[in-house]
Amino acid sequence: MGYKLPNGGTFQHAATYATALAFTAISNAAEAVATVVGSTIAAGDIVLLTSGWSKLDSKVVRVKAATATAITLEGIDTTDTQVYPVAGGAGTMRKVLTWVQIPQISDMAFSGGEQNYLDVVFLEDDQGKQIPTDKSAASMVLTIADDPAQAFNGVLLKADAGKQIEAARLNLPGNDTLLYGTYTSFSKQPAVSRNNLLTRTVSLALQAEPTRYLTAAV
Figure 1: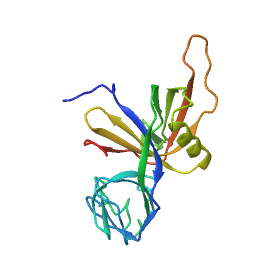
Figure 2: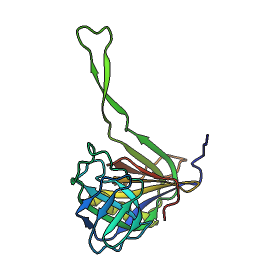
Figure 3: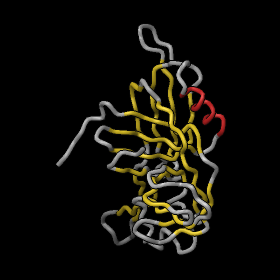
């Protein structure tokens, strides 16, 4: 058994990226290997993916091993060919070059991601059944102290205006890291309430399931 408090955790948003690197193929393996040309990506780098496999598309992952022609994606199991059809996963990866911390977070609220069901009942049934279908869209909202002089403001405003999928990560105590691919929205008007902090919100619409690593991401 184990448990921990989130106290001391930090949240970061990608600030800059390398040029997108195409991968022409990706293997069906316990840890997927992407075929590339002339890569300078190294083990430990964090990359934001696009892929013909919808479950891999918009995912943020860590590189386990790398050469100029092959990139191994840590913990990404693509052995199920129903989910990851053979020869169907080609796409691109963008290495995150720099991160900016979003400090002074007073609240982090998650929503969505619940399992949806189809109710099924037949004439002969005394009781209906539920069949799992999809999961609802997931998002999180960070409430932060309004501090327009901080460097993260420019990064978040650019992400808000760009309407492109971005990388973000939550660093929990004990080297536990969660990586997200997200559309980022940043409120321009602080919330104003007498005798309370001025606050703003960072809204993150998650585009893929988070990737979790139990060792520190650089």
